[in-house]
Length: 280
Image (tube, rainbow, N blue to C red):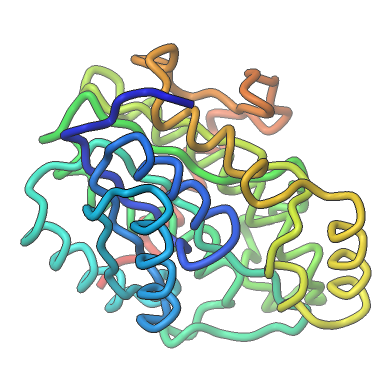
C-alpha cells in the first residue's frame, strides 16, 4: 500500500504486538501520525521505537490504556483529546482469549469487557474527535470465528464458561455492534467497517493457555498468516481511497463478504446493552 496519509491522525489499540503493531506500522509508513494504545507502557515504547525506525516516521506516540477498564479508557480518551483535537482513523484491535473465566477491574467477564465493551467505549468516547476530523474511518478487527451470542448471559453467569465460546461470542458481537454503529454514523462523514484478519500467528492463542490455546497456537504457527498479512485488510480499510464513504461492511482479504449475523433488532438490543454496561 502506498496511499498518502500525511496530515491524518490514527489510533490503533492493542498496538504493541501482532496485528495491531503491523497495522500501526502500515499507517506510519504512509505518513500518518499514529497513536499506539497499549496496556504496557514498556512494550508500547519498544513498539514505538521499532515502528519509527523502520518507517522513518517520527510521528509515532504511545499512550497506555487497558480497554477492559472503563476508568482507563476514559482517561485515555481525555488524554488523546488534549493532544489531538481531530482524528481520522480508529482501529479497534485490542483483544484477548482466556480459557478461564476472569473478571475485569469493573467486575465484568474479561473477554466481553475487552473484546466488546473495549471497542464500544473507546469508539463512543472518540466519536467527537472522529466527527471533527471527518472524513474519518473506524475499523473493527472481528473474526470468522464468531457465534454463540447470548444477550441474556453475555458474562457466563448462568452458562458454563468456555474460552472458545466466550471468544466467538465476542466476535459475533463485534460484527453486530459495527452494523448498529454504521447506522448511527450515516451523514456524519465517519464510516465503520469490520474485518476478519484470518488465522494469524500472534500472541492471542499463546496467552490463552489450556489445550485449545496450545493447539490453536501450534496450528497458526505452522499454517497461519504472519501478523503483517493479518493486518493487511485493516490497513487497507483505514487508508484506501476506494473505501471513502463505504460503511457497514464485513471484509475478508480486501473483499466484502456477507455476514450471517445481520439482524437489526438484535443489533439494537446489543448496542443498548453495551451502553448500559459502560455507564460510569
